[in-house]
Length: 88
Image 1 (cartoon, rainbow, N blue to C red):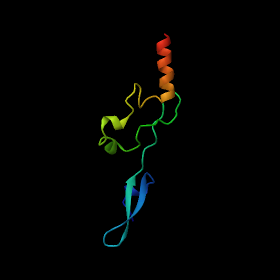
Image 2 (image 1 turned 180 degrees about the horizontal axis):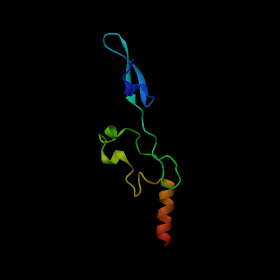
Image 3 (image 1 turned 180 degrees about the vertical axis):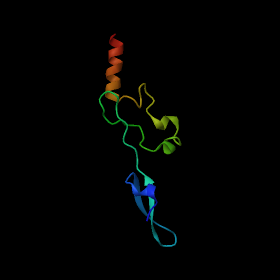
């Protein structure tokens, strides 16, 4: 019987083969959902999906796009935003 914390479905169950030839159950946390645009709700490209300890290992340029509002707005909404700023 697994430990109480592993009985919920918030953990992914993975079957691993050990060097001794046994098949063992390992529990891994699931990936978080994709980041979405703050305006239209579309999934953001160029923003990795991972748990915080995985994201912290990445360099700054790999964490989000380097343009203004990168990682916050999708490219379409950002372009719209820049046009409106230029027109005012």
